[in-house]
Amino acid sequence: MPKIADLHFQLYLNNHNDANIIKRKFRNYVINDVNNYKRTTRVFFKSEKNITTNQNIFYLPLLDFTEQFKLFNDLFRQVVINILSKNNGLLLHGSSIIYHNKGIIFIGDEGAGKSTVRKLLSHFASLGDDTALIRKIGKEYFLFGSPFYQRTNMAYPPKKVHIAGIFLLKQSFGDMVQRLSFLKSIKAILANIFKSPINDNQKNEEKEIMINTIDLVNKVKLYKLYFTKTVSFWRIICYTLAFSKRLNIQNLIKRINPGALYKISTNMNWNLAFCSRDFLGQCEVINELSWEFEFNKLKKVKDIANLIIKTKIDSAHIQLIAKYRKTFGNNKNTCIIMIKNKDKFTIIDGNHHAIALYLLGNTRRTARITCLIGEENPTPNN
Image 1 (cartoon, rainbow, N blue to C red):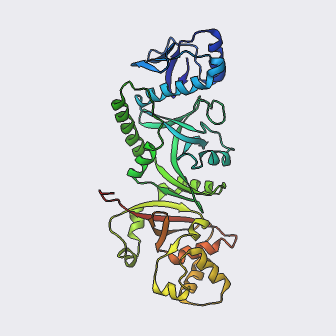
Image 2 (image 1 turned 90 degrees about the vertical axis):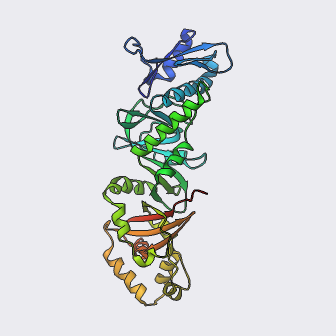
């Protein structure tokens, strides 16, 4: 009798050989004492082609476990997905790690980098490389170990940990973690949910999935992780988990230069982010005549910084940048205000700070780069 995500499944196997295979493959998930568990999902095997069900009783095709264990693994997972949706749970297409006894989940489309991130963070324990088992217990959501054989062809430890955050992956030219809005968080979860093809009541299942998703997003923070294929992104994740709770977005918005605000739409959604020097270097400064005149119409932070290093030009802009370079360091924090349009990031407040922080990378001093990113809210027609 396997116990998965604190849910109990009783398998009625056809012979001792199949039972031994289950005990070996799902070794840490098998419970022998079934008398204390009245609420169980029962699984039988019959000579049928498809999975059939009657409430919490499921009928799987008759299989030879010696030859067809992977097929059983996939079919049984469909049963678990079905039961999870009825018990405040979800199965996400994602990898995970345990950090400080909390779960961090990475989701994304095929090829987004879930396996890459998992390999780069292989020194941390994992509860799944392709699936993340989530379930609400009481008022909190937990990440559970998955017994299902995935890319690594192994069952993961049967642990249960609180979720620190869920990160939607996007490969990029630098590292940045941006908090997702409520609507984007819901879209990200729905796009990465494993759904069960068991059609016992499809409308109810879709309703349960939506209810579970909204509740999850209300209780667990979702972020978008822009990353390069190096472990450098981990530092940005640690900044996010450690410092994001300390910063008030409304207070940061109040600090935006009014002269910059009037140039942008008032229909903006603002979110907090942390980024790396390389990411900051690819951002553009706001298009102002004084910048165009002094820096030959260069817009990228990286290009302007390189021009300052190579030339001996002196100006009010360069003097201010030099002043900030002297004060930054030792993880002193500043906030750069940006506007995002598709995959383009434009700084509307903090040009001098951004260039100074980028130039700081040429020294041994470091800084935590915090950003406030605004995106125009979509109109109903979008």
